[in-house]
Image (cartoon, rainbow, N blue to C red; front, side, top):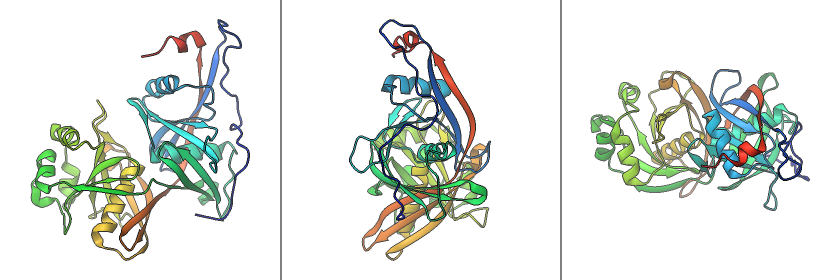
Length: 338
């Protein structure tokens, strides 16, 4: 993903660190800066919002959870690396708990760090090794249009699990089974850091008409032990988009994502495998979010070997739309455990 290395001693991103009480019992205000970044977008009020905490060294997992819960969105916490060869570490929290990896939050985090000057993208690309709970992942930071950073993040290697009968999925989605295009493959469990059921849909009208509130979706995911379900359709409305995706999960009150980097990655890997594409690199533009009124795009590149897809990476930009800080007394933080 490039030959330019950025390795060196980790330092916290510029800006105030978390201010905590100097001694036990001292009731000093804690200042916790954060950014809100619209990932998969190059301007404000588009894409997928994520919260980024640029220096989380003094935050424990409980406080990380409380921040994600308060902001009601997924959050990324920038930390010093703990593994040899890593340049920076991210932890990912949702309002429902910590996850191993989130594609759009990773893009948002690097957009935030580039905005602060912590990394300076170049035309050839600055290579960074990212440490996550899902492993070490390659990142490449390039100059995009009008100076915006173009961020490429390697996802965890794709994993192909069991096929899921089209009839079972159709019943869950409450659609006729003949509208689920399976070709030579059934819908299938695929993971690029987050296991989900990838479901190809032939008819764009059926694709748009699936009700995110259908109770069968949650039952299907629970029965199959998958974290989400991604619909993928090649009958796109936009000639510049190769695949249209919708991503569902079972989080209370939030059954459909605006978009998902891991969902788009899994869908692209599935489609490349289904097509039997020869070994090499295939790049697909994935459109998301139209069904929830916030369309966005992410570029997905699948590298296939003789036995199928071996690596997936996503490329997108992110726009910093808000800078702020939490101002909380440490005593309140300490008493806020669930």
